[in-house]
Length: 102
Image (cartoon, rainbow, N blue to C red; front, side):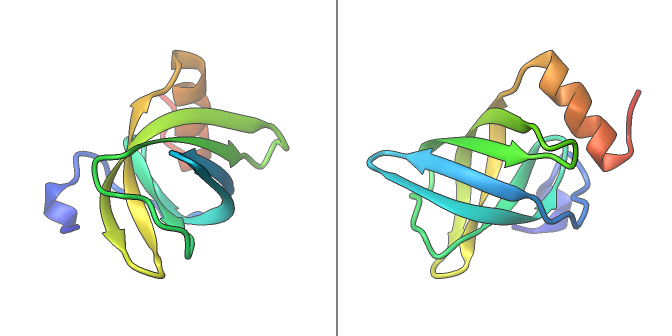
């Protein structure tokens, strides 16, 4: 995905992730995160347009659940997602992680 198409700047942050979609679930990690989405580094497959459930393990040791839509896939590398359902509290936690608290 071209950087100019993104609404939010991505920050390179490695965070442990559990993801679940369709009949699959897997552990993975992020390579970058923004307020609007992230890249999930995994050999697992998720189809473009698929809704998946993510849990991000934040530095405070707590899991942050979000729902996301797969917007692109790089086979055997991972996929990029756009967050589609994230609570206000979790959005605030995400902003804090990114160093962009309002």
